[in-house]
Image (cartoon, rainbow, N blue to C red; front, side, top):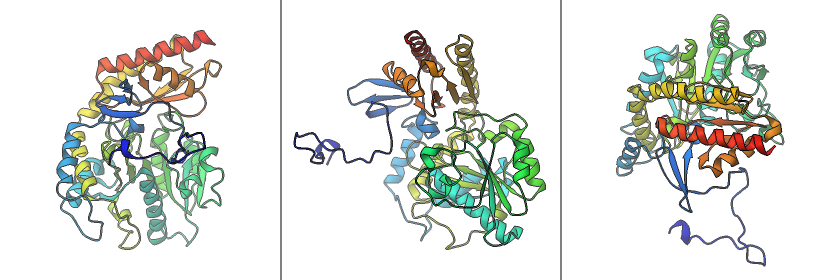
Length: 419
């Protein structure tokens, strides 16, 4: 059976098909049929340059040959065993990821890897681990563990995570909320220090806040947070699900400030745009508080995920994606700053091949700008108000990047003229 063979759900008396899909997204009016590299093609045959890259899930572009080959090879062997049994790629995947990321954490060469599926699952895993470590090792009284988080955060949409979100769309209507979190202003290291007490088991932060509009903190923020957490025996957990694995021009964005967190959550790009793969990586003594029965996932660390994950690590091990993000990032941000200087944008922020763009609200919303880009054959995504995010694949060519930025300039010029 193909997609064309599936009959639409019977609709109203006028014969209009009733949509069977729950309406929890408001996508741009484009329906993708095929994709390759930095480009997608819709059902009508029109091509678009993808400058969103699946919120960093497509760091290596669509259908990267090495990743597709790894997946296809594994599809012919075994795809799922569940963690009731071992399989021949589980430990190689863990060793490969630990070797790549472990030295960038305080876990060093002895780091452990706990594989899961989605980014939100990785964050939930880190929270559970930090709480259990707090009770079993630090000696926090049962039921009193607290975690400090930053305002404007986005760590997922599970009920625990939305409990400490300040985004009303993600939070409203999903109470009662999970207790045990203290929200402080993002970028304010003094606020983090003031929120820590004897009940604090972890500080959980994004190195750069993607959903908030690619917000980059002050240069001294992460070093100061690292200093205070180490002094107070509090775990520093970096959510690198969007910022990690090359996006910022380094393997982890925390390298930008010379900081090594205790635990790192990874996802999105770890699956190479092929399958959902996530993981928590870091200190062995912390992750060892989890024992059989305390945490798990049927699909976490499945053979297909491990095959793709190993191939992703191999790409990153060369340093080429990170180098491209740094070098193309220079061109990227120079062009974007030029649009600010020309009065077409209010502000630009970002690292590597990642940027948040603020449009003058009088000229339109972020959605307006994304629709204008869509009309010019470029895919991007708005976030809040008049802000959009750009996150090209790290494999994008300089020529394609210039094409996208020229389309952006034209779209902004037309919006300025029309208002």
